[in-house]
Length: 291
Image (cartoon, rainbow, N blue to C red; front, side, top):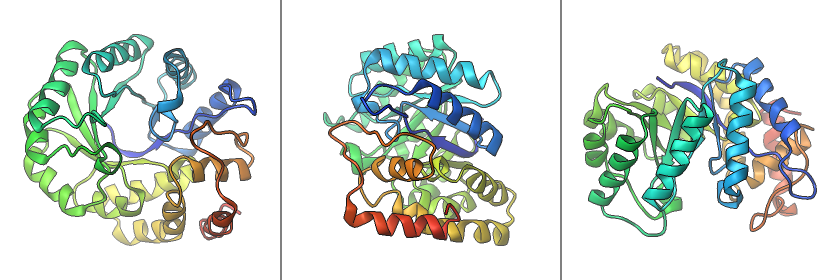
């Protein structure tokens, strides 16, 4: 259902910290023009933890309106509360989102049974396509393949974003779910290898700054044109690594500002890219063909 290069979209802001809606609209149009295969709004890269409920709703509504069915809009609606996740997921569905992506409950560290019951409850309550999101490095909670296999029996749980960066996990997930769910990488540096092992695409940070190149790389990988995919991915590797040199989305927002696409604005507790890392990130921009 979802494949290719799916951008984990930044949330553009003005100098005074307000949402920059005109800039958001331009970014959505740019991604459509550049061939991006889907947009995730209100994700980690979109600074979800710092957004208010009304801001999250506004962002989903604006993306849906601008996209007008030309590109799937996927709303981040996962929290550490099952009831709140249900409410956010229902609201996103009512606003016209094509799917929702729900990170594993963070901080409270549920058991595998708790994770299963959490996702089952959301999926059975809200009839929208749901993408699971596993990123144990951030959440302190790992959604194991055997639990994913149980969840794959629920019809509207259609995919999983795996951000472990562990390619053995891709193989384990493929064996666990077969063709019942789409596997999406959440780790740009290993995304090509992930797709060559059976993944359907990547939910990407790098796609924010190199949308066309990421789309073409994913397209080649899914067509099993390995040589072409490698040629496209190699210049992007420095960018992939630079995007995580500091906490996401610090580097990607700095790069987008350097490119003139957004204002230089990010919300506390995140701060502007440190001066010591700016030369490394700028060099990655040159290697990736952005400068």
